[in-house]
Amino acid sequence: MFTGRIARFDAPGAPFQIHEVTLPELGPGEILIKVSRTNICGSDVHAWHGTFNTGGLGGQLPTVLGHEMVGAVAATGDGVASDSNGAPLTPGTRVVFPYFYSCHTCRNCLRGRRGACLNLSMAMLGRADEPPYFVGGYGDYYLLPAGAVVYTVPDAVSDDIAAGANCALSQVMYGLERVDLQLGETVVVQGAGALGLYAVAVAKARGAAQVIAIDGVPERLELATAFGADEVVDINAAPTVKDRAKLVRALTGGYGPDVVVEVVGHPSAIDEGLKMLGLFGRYVEIGNINLGKTFEFDPSRFVFGNKTMVGVSLYDPAVLSRALTFLEQHQKTLPFDRLAAAHYPLDAINDAFAAAEGRRDVRASIVP
Figure 1 (tube, helix red, strand yellow):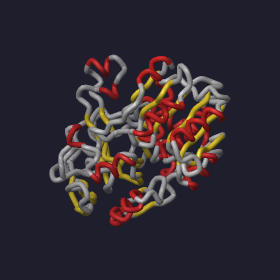
Figure 2 (cartoon, helix red, strand yellow; figure 1 turned 180 degrees about the horizontal axis):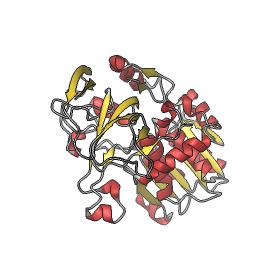
Figure 3 (cartoon, one colour; figure 1 turned 90 degrees about the horizontal axis):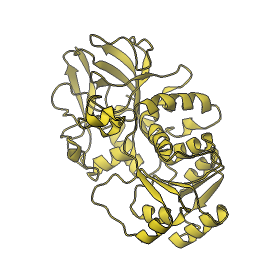
């Protein structure tokens, strides 16, 4: 038996409630994780407000939010001996894992599209008022189901740096892989929150000749430069779409960028990004996860410009292993530690969400 706390989420807008619960036993293939750190991702804030409908994904209330996490193996069920790269798993091994779980046998999984698994399940969707209780990252423990992909965290990578790997970092890595970003190409990143900062860093690591970050928060623009942005565009200094599009065109020699990555999460950013995008450019859409939101745009610009839009939801689980390598290789040259510098104990989760909502932290974290 394993007893620990969860921050139960009962309804949108309602305060989190701390409950102590007990997991009776582990089933075959399951892994119990002692959570060491869980970030507050934008989707967690949207779910808290009720604008990200987890019910549409099969979720139920009450639940436990939180998915961008790192922890250590507390116990394993029968048949668990190693991680997905073959490294041994024993109690105390630090691990990260995708927060979604594919069946590996449906037609989409067999075609290499495991993020579109027809039997997909994920963190934050299970009920928190019945076993196993530990169904999200905001708690002392989290239960990984049998068959989950899991990777050992390199000893050199600390928990605060590793925590962002299984969502924000892997998501933008996968997005840039999907559009096959090439050496010498130019990239615009719309939004310099955690995903945007990772996108800047990954684009530079993939050999982008020029990366431009757009945001309106001075601290985030400064961070974008620290993460490798060659230019930043302050929306306060260029207040209209026309102003920003003209400036980006000028910065890219009049051509527009080869790739634009949207991680703002507002539909209006899409039309703006498409206006900036150069001929035969590729638009990576990641940020807009709220259902029912729309925008208007002129499709002739899309057609005559031979532009491509790629929607990116989740990622291939193998990307997470590469994300850990990326962190290990670049942690001494990039300020990853500044992304989740603010951390709160589990008992202060309501304060943490208030801070995240007010955009005071790039990534606030819960440290049980």
